[in-house]
Amino acid sequence: MLAHSKDIEDPTYAYSLRWGIELGFRAMKSGGFNMEDTKLIKPDRITTLYQIIAILTAFAHKGGIVLNAIKPIKIRSHGRKSISFIRLFLDFLRSSKAHVTLVYRAITSYLAPPWKNFLKNCRVR
Image (cartoon, rainbow, N blue to C red; front, side, top):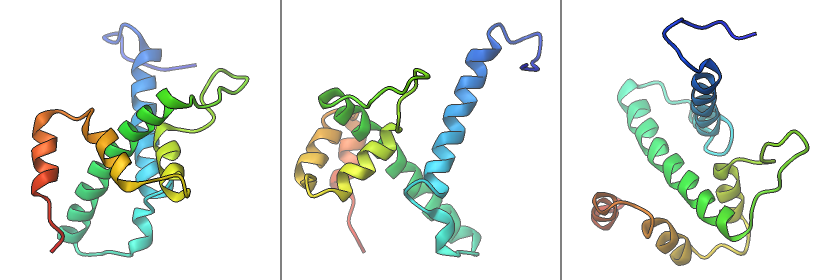
């Protein structure tokens, strides 16, 4: 049963969008980036970390899409993927198969031009 407003034409679709957002938050909090393990308490530092992790989550999702095109994720009996695109990409980075330059090129080849400029100007300080 799904309670919804009469204004929503397709509540199942609307809920699926919400579920995707929930999975994104799970990836940031405990599904790979482990944001909560930092024990940060200052709001400005939490905000900065959240912004960085949000960008990395987007990159990991896009990287997972690229990897899925090369070797598709297994589909379970219920019809859903066994792992997320984010999990696929993070597992790939942890494996010995990952070569940072290839991963960087694969992701940036799918990004819009403003992101490419952003990445070129990033420096670790």
